[in-house]
Every structure is written in structure tokens, then in C-alpha cells.
Amino acid sequence: MTVINKMVRPKDVQGKIYKFKSTSECFALGIPPPVLPDKVRGHMVLVLGIIPGKLGYVKLMTITSTLKDDGDYVPISPTPKKGFSIQLRFRSYLKWHHGDAARVIPRLRENSYLKIDAYYEVPIQTLVEATDDFGNQFMIWSKHRGGLGELRDYVQRRDLIRERSHLIDEKHT
Image (cartoon, rainbow, N blue to C red; front, side, top):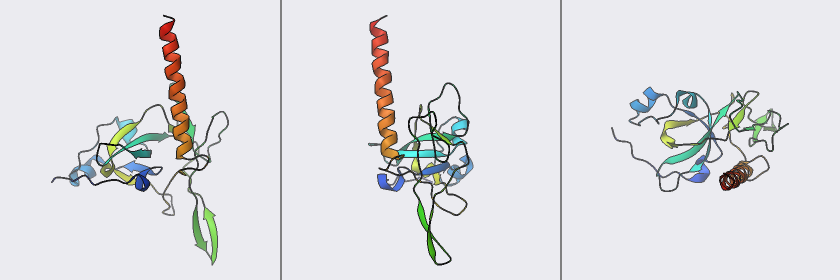
């Protein structure tokens, strides 16, 4: 069975939380499973966007509940921001309850962090959308505070600072 990659539109995937399909599910669908460490496949992931020039591929980072000294993380609300520069926030949804509209914010378990020191490129077909207990899609705001734009700016600034620091270190050695 041959799988045809479909064009993925950025607005359809970016900022959404996904889980990986199992290896057996990928094979049953005729999709080669992504070659990733098992610890990555076991986590939910945040899709940052599509990969230009790689039809059907997306760039993503993993979500974890465990902080390690050798990692760089951003907390996801309701995990407290304390000690971090930014905090990601999920988009809210309107739900009708007994004739009234109520704003609902999907929540991951406590102590959820986006691991921002590594990213992966995988076919979107190997992922399935993650939802809360009520079927709400987990989605980060695109442009609001705590959103995807702020995350991209933060990572870009961090990488620029690291690059400059590395160049200065090379100059002095």
C-alpha cells in the first residue's frame, strides 16, 4: 500500500497538540513510522508548523512532565510560570451548558512542559490529534500572549544569544 502525501496547510496543524499513532497502526495504514527515540514517541507533541519543501511533514517539540537539568523547557498553563520567561496557554472554547455559554479551557495534567531544546520532523500522517476528556482539541493560541508567536520569538532569541556566546567563546580560545 502506498500512502500519498497530502498538502498540509499551516493553519490546520500549527499550535495543535498531537499523539503518535502506534507503530502497528502506521504499518496497517501503509505509513512508515517515524524513526524517533521511544521516549519521544511516548509523549504528546506540539506542532510548530509545516516543513517547507517536505510535503506532508511537520516540525514538532515534545511535551513532558519531567524537568531535567540538561533540558530547556516552557511551562504549559496551568503549570506555574514562576522561574520561566514565558508560559504557553491553550485556546478556550465556548460550550453550551443548560442554555448558557461557558468558556472552557482544555487542560493537560499538572506539571506539563514543552521541551524546547530539540525538535523533530515527521509526517503528519503519523500523528493523531490529542483531545481532553470532553473532546476539545488542545491548541495553543497563535498570536496571543502565551501563544505560538511568542514561543517562536523566545526560541529564536535564545538561539541567537547562544550563537553569539559560542562565537565569543571561539574568539577567546
